[in-house]
Image 1: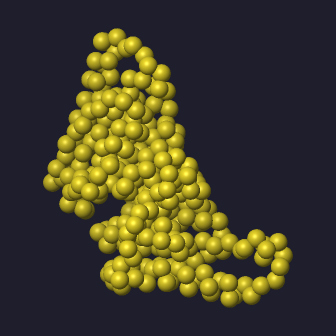
Image 2 (image 1 turned 90 degrees about the vertical axis):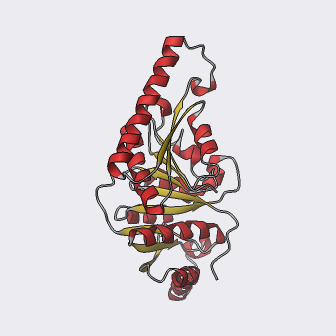
Image 3 (image 1 turned 60 degrees about the vertical axis):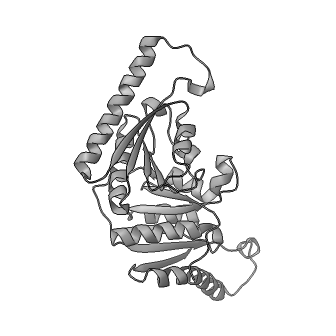
Length: 289
């Protein structure tokens, strides 16, 4: 994996917010930043024969966008090494290719210009969970600092890479880490069957604590808040994200089909949370000893 952060820019305000976030993270990680602007000449996969004047106008605007992005980086983090890449094609596919070996990919939550028509779907939903590294979707302004990172855990190995990323972010920022574990009653119990509710609650608390234990040992300087609740995971994570600088969730990483890769929780969080979100793809990463 290359030591570079890739950020997609398109001339929109959300896109430039993504540049600012990426510049700060490049500074924290001590890695260079690559701004990528994609000129989409074939929208909706329908070939069009554009006149030379139209195509030149698109390229001119893209170069202007990249220059503005570089100016943001220079003003915000002057020591960060920044480069620019102008590409043609489909934005999501081009960004996936650029981020195939990058430290992380950063995009805005919606776009204009090169990312035409993106609400949260055409770009963000088509790159999140589909590249090896983390994908950060920037939704909020970066001015307010909460001093907290939120990570969702579920007791499975699939969220281990997300936890590694969240602990690293908390460590670099000097922030506390809130580990959210949301659980629900099994169907039979929800249907009215009796159970030892307190024992069930304690069992879920134990699962969360057990999964966090090796990471706490590895990163003892990070203050960890274990937040175990009987609630819907999307609602719980979205609410916790309102008081966080970054919300980190895992993805399954099993398929090229976006909805299968993300899963219901990651997809729901991307749609409903108002904070900045990092989606970290699951892969074969051993739990720290």
